[in-house]
Image (cartoon, rainbow, N blue to C red):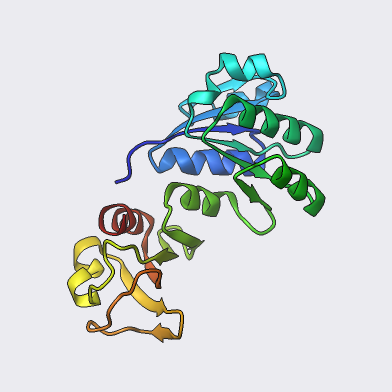
Length: 221
């Protein structure tokens, strides 16, 4: 499995709590921050740490050690000004990767101008899907088919480029199956064991979440 990454999630509303829960379940350390004591209490037994704090206060963020986190997600749901201010402070404090939820297109444009690394529009990106995309750099998309099974799009890395599906054999090794390969020139549905993977091809993989996670972290990276 992938090594643990430290995430700070600011704003524990519907989106932020969904995202932070899934990141925790994926084995990562998550600090949850919200002004609402009730929301923080709800997440206290789930996340690594959760605190009641104002993320628009630079000294507060500094005291929480946010600059040492690998990634900070601004998931503030109802206050565009607070969202922008928190994102600015996180960038100024030197957080490696800053991700922010945009409430409107204009909000997204402002976040882009202040240097936010990735902007999420929740109507297009569900919290669980985003969690998997943050954790897995080769993952383009993630759709939950049922409680147990998911379908994911994974980019072919240099590590596995040139292998046939028979040589890679994800079904035997990880329990998941490649059901299609999207090549720049064509889409192969139900590929055969002899089909060869090329770098930057997109594999459509079906399996349990843990099987796909293992396949992505152990075979592809």
